[in-house]
Each structure stands twice: as C-alpha cells, then as structure tokens.
Length: 412
Image (cartoon, rainbow, N blue to C red; front, side):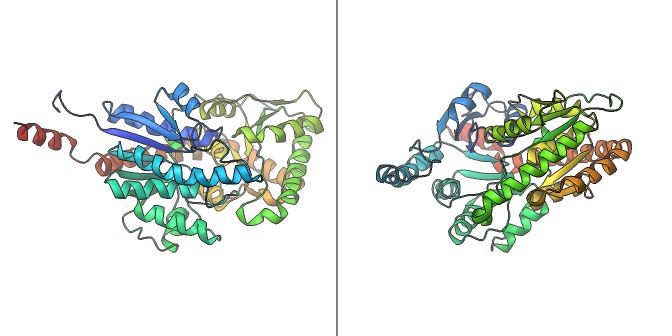
C-alpha cells in the first residue's frame, strides 16, 4: 500500500469531448471508468471542446480547448481571421501551461490521427501537436489510447499528425489499419499495440429477445458529405446518401416495419428531419439520445440495425444485434470484419436502396447465427480491453508505489 501522505497522480484528458459527438464522449467515459477503478486517487481534469458538458456530466473540472470561441466557424471577416490567428498563439501558451500541471495526459480513443471527415490542419491537428510537443518539453507522459488513424493526403495535416504521434509517450490503436497508416507516415510502431475500440469497455444493457416479425429496425444516420478529399463534390455525395437512405426507410415502412432513426452527433439532426418529412408515416420515429448508453438501449430493443457512424456500429455490435454498415471509411469495414460481419457493408458514398434492401434481407435470414457470433466476439473484445488497461497502467503509472516509498525514505 502507498503512504497516506503521497501526492496523487495528476491526470488530464484531452480532445473534442463534450462537443456533441457521442462516440468521443463514450471513449472518455470508458477511460474515466478505468481510472476510477484502477487509480481511484488520481486527480482528473479535462482540456476539451465542451467544458460545461464534461464538467456537468462527468463531474471533473474542465477547461476550454480553444481560447478563441469561434474556432470552428469559418472565418471570413478580418476580425474573425485575426481572432483565429491570435488564438493559435494564445493556445500554444495555454496548452503548455495545462500540460505542465499534469503527470499524465490521456487522449481517449477518437479518430485523432485521421482525416476521414473534413478537417483543417490548424484546427484539431494543431491542438494535438501542441499537446504532444508540450508533453515532451515538460516530461509529462502523453498517451494516445485506442486511437484511429488513416492515410492523410493534405501535407500540413499529415506533418502535424506524424509529429504528434512521434512525440507521444504511448500509442495504441483501435484497428491494425490505423497502426499501418502511422507506420506508413514514418513513425516507428514496433512497440504499439492494437486493441478493440474503447467503447467496447462500456457497460452493456441487457438485450431484448427479438419480438417476432415484423420487429423494429434501427437506422443510424449521419450528416455525411464525404471525406477531406471530397470537398469539391460534398453536396453531391450528401444528396445521394440522403436519397438512398430515405428510399431504404420507405421500403422498410412498406413492409410494415417500425423504423427508429438514430444519430451519433448533434449535426445529424437535419438528416433525421429530412427523412421524417419525406417518409410521412407513424411507423418512423426518431430517438432522443444523449450518450452511447442511450444508443445501446435503443439498439438492444431492435431486431436489426443499419448504421453509418462508426460508434453507432460499435453500439449495435456490442449489444449483439445483427448489423449492416453504411461504410464511409476503412475503419468501418475493419470493425465489421473483426466482429464477423464483413459481408454486410454497403458504401455510404453510393447508397443503392435496392441493393441495400437485398443485403438487409440476407442479414435477417442469418440473424440467430449472427447473434451467436457477436456474443463470442464481444467476449474476446472484453478480454483484449482488460489487456489494454493493464498495459496503460504499466506505461503511465510506472511503479507508483516504489516511487512514493522511495520519496518517503528520502524525506528528512
């Protein structure tokens, strides 16, 4: 046991947390659960996108990630551009001061090393670089835990991501593709491990038995406009995604199926509204979800799930409901493959309602078998995440007892 006079370890959590993305907040929740179970004396606070939400929901002190409050609005007026520019300099000082106050900083999950959705280099990639560089400067251990990564075409973004990864003390990834992408950027990944996404460590609600035909179908939608390299045709991609998804929902309703529309980020609400407007039927309803736990409860009550957002897929797979992915990135395909459902992916960029309906019917025919497969794969994921947290303790809290005991012996 450590002495009662020990100085508690100061742990910071960092990222676009509390900003309306349920997946990011779910990753934070998993890490806080680990810290409270394994390191209950640690003093934890956050530097994040939505400090009010994080402080209220997770009961930890939280500081705003950016000094300039208009950081994620497009700057067009001279004043806004100047504000953003000054904010970059102020953030360098603020981030360094915050990092210096901690022994350990954890970046919990999230796709922090990828640009599969539109991203500017001087937004979050710059913030992550400041964090990792400050950690190296002040001797604070920075851990990128269960993060996502992907090949990045834009040179400034790629450079910031590469240096962030190099400067971190610890890295682990949510799939092998992510580790391969970082290795391809010139980072030595020989000691980096791959584990399931952190959200698989969250508590699972009990699943309802299928309620008999025709059972409810959850459809997780997304405000999808393609990725970082698709900006020129973003509207065209969005229109095709929305049209295809709407036609699919209409076909389910014509079959008499109740459809529950789900989101994973606040920005998805207009897509739900558009589908409700286009498919005017009492069989189509929208769920109010504020967390991954809420999503899991909805999905546990469904016969089948069709979903786009990565963490919507995770929630569906985790509760063991047969799932079809509207896949927008390789990470979705890798996740479906890991869970034994590789055959049930459909491209989000080219939603074909007729083909999607065929895949959906094929999935439902194998429902009982796939539920058994998912139960087995979830047990494996749970064991692997126990290993992740054991590795994290070894890397970030090395020999805490011995260090404190030594300090007590050395005290005059």
